[in-house]
Image 1: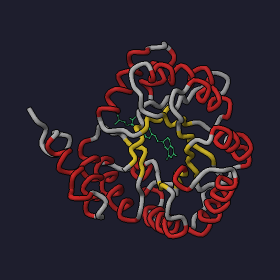
Image 2: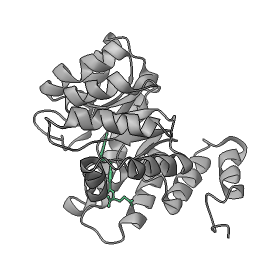
Image 3: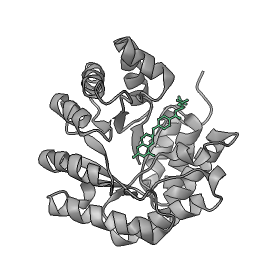
Image 4: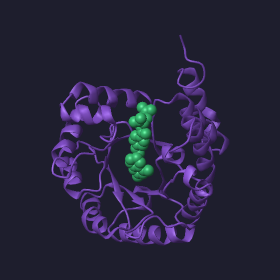
Amino acid sequence: MIIIGEKINGTRKAVAAAIREKDAQFIRDLATSQAEGGSTYLDVNAGTAPEREPDDMAWLVSTIQAVCDLPLCLDSANPAALKAGLDVVNTSPMINSVSGEQARIDGVLPLALAHQTDLILLALDDKGIPETVEGRMEIVRKLVGMALDGGLTQAKLHIDPLVTAISTGTGNAILTFDTIRAIRSEFPDVHITGGASNISFGMPLRPIINRYFMALAIQAGLDSAIINPNDRELKAAIMTAEMLMDRDKYCLTFNKAFRAGKIGPKPD
Ligand code: THG
């Protein structure tokens, strides 16, 4: 499982304050704790006003890189902010994200192709998020086609089928699972990712909903997720689901995580 640590996101109050006050220690601590939690990438989203965002993105990237050598997932719709991040990264990042929206096709896709980065593709366009699997697949097909034409391989593509709240439509999880299956059957070598916590907006017991959602999404073929990597129960759910789906040879990852005290009862 590719784990993209979600916590360095300026839409979170404490992170917004740290960006405003240039509190480097707060950001460094988020980077090291998420690395400790087993992140593959760290998401970096400044979430600030467009005119501030490039500087804030560059500051976040430099601050994180001072303590952590994980690759970053530059999270913005703003090409100027992505460019500012690309200018200072030490390791080839993932770009989060292009969508079928014309402004992102024109502004974000060329950056990913110029730098040949990994790239998240969102199944939405200027008309919004389609409410059918086929509607989402039309957008995915078009974006995958453009990325492959630009020299990226399927293995560099991370397709986000989009997760919408179960509180606003009780078929929403099934729509995501069915889209995951359709992507997996049409593009066997891409990664499939998503922001897991979107499923539980507006509901009580969000962590429980997120856990079972992730297990079912893994069963459908999801192999990457933007999550809180320090949520032990979520990590246990992910590792268990992957093991049950025969994606953990000899159960090595599960056993190793148990022995290291990363899942199950906390070592005292
Ligand atoms: N798809 C893609 N990128 C995305 C999203 C997606 N980027 C942003 C978002 N969705 C994923 N990132 C977050 C970041 C924080 C939270 C949720 C999604 C969040 N944090 C809680 C808080 O701040 O209170 C809890 C964090 C914690 O427990 O510490 O809700 O869908 N491609």
